[in-house]
Length: 236
Image 1 (cartoon, rainbow, N blue to C red):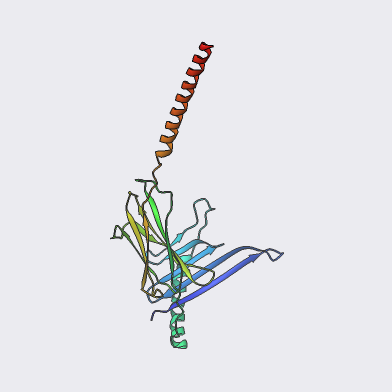
Image 2: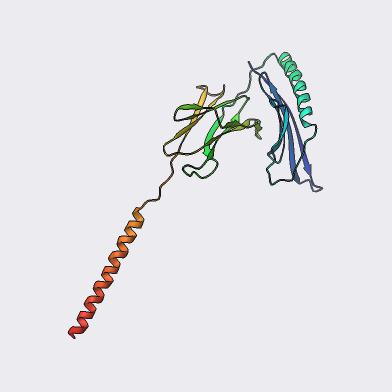
């Protein structure tokens, strides 16, 4: 059984009137196969440690004031060693208790409005899962896609579960069908698949045709009325 160890520190900064101004969080987690270390502010991730590339990654948006995190990666490596030791202690002390599991809920949507032939990004949002890890895979027209896809860090929800995003860059073509498959041990069938089809609405020509015909008939009616009015006056 795979267990997941977690170290969580939460700091709240308040004013003299005890009103909460900002909330920051540092999260470190480890399992038999995964490592996590991130820092966030007011629900937004600002930094995480990439243990594969062995570097810290600043994830604040471009419009935010520049923020640096000197020494955070080295601290994250140290936290992982502490987490592994704690995990081993917990396994021994609690004799592998029954693990709480929560199934994930997935949704798939495009980042931008879909325009045929214009590059876009599909996002598969997976939330409500516990514990990590979760596996996310993509297909295009029933063919597995591995290029141009990425997976975010795990983010902790307020209820203790986690959410994660997977993204896939694509160029929409009419009729293409994409799917996002989520695999987690809490799912009864082991996995759940969400599909998304390229379906760009083409403006209908019907209203324009009807307006054109109506306008033409109206003009003919005016012309005919004018003709008979003139004829009537001549008879008088």
